[in-house]
Image (tube, rainbow, N blue to C red; front, side, top):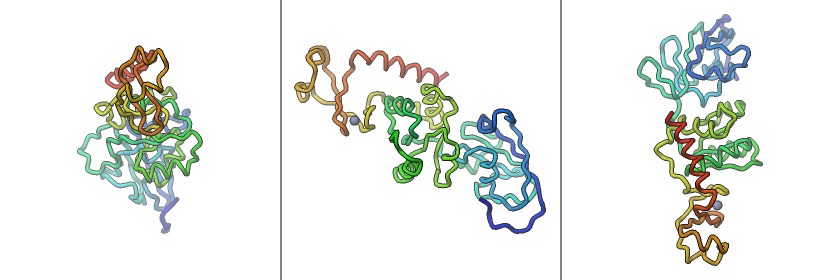
Amino acid sequence: MHESSIDVRPFSVRLSLHGNLDFFLPPRTRRKDITRSLSEKTSVKDVIESCGVPHPEVDLIVVNGEEVDFDYGVINDAEIEVYPPEIQSPQSIKKRLQVNTMERFVTDGHLGKLTRNLRMLGFDVAYDPEAEDRQLLDVMDRENRALLTRDRRLLMHAVVRTGYCPRSQDPDEQTVEVIRRFNLLGLIAPFTRCLRCNAPLQEIAKADIIEELEPLTKIYYEQFRRCTGCGQIYWPGSHFPKLQKHLEKIRANVDG
Ligand SMILES: [Zn+2]
């Protein structure tokens, strides 16, 4: 995508990628500085994305010392500094391009375990393993969610305002990344959301559900929660200590 072209002489831009934005460069050529030759006026967003960095990963752009927006048109030789959200730039920032917190997400079909972890921590995550790209973008837009996906092309879609590409392939590490990126540590509320359907859980009196319980559950447990969406009943059963340990590990890694 280029803006309407006026005849300009060819020029070259140099991009410096800060933080871990070099993650998006091809592995063999992974360097922090890239030079690009251009022959027409091009938005700085397109210049950056042509290098492989999706715009939701970019929080600050400085062109020849000036902070600019994504639609800034590059027309001459330029030095472009590109910063991710977690990195502070040397100067005070006026044009932050990303939100620094978001509690609602939509995940693509490959991120089922990340989804489960985030729901376990109490976060609202829309997830449909069958969803097509179009549907993910619709849910993101309509319900004001951040898009989580490792598909960079999808993250580059023009309608995406807030999103993140988990660097790790490990679901627990991905969870730590998302908590850090969106500053979620103080908002964790474990076991308040249904792992199956994402609806909030509600405390419920044992007497109200006693008929639905297995004989041993009836004997050993007193505290129950029911999903306000699908009706699933939760209690701190034999799997609970393991889940809690799992959560503590994630929390410790965020702090560490
Ligand atoms: Zn449910």
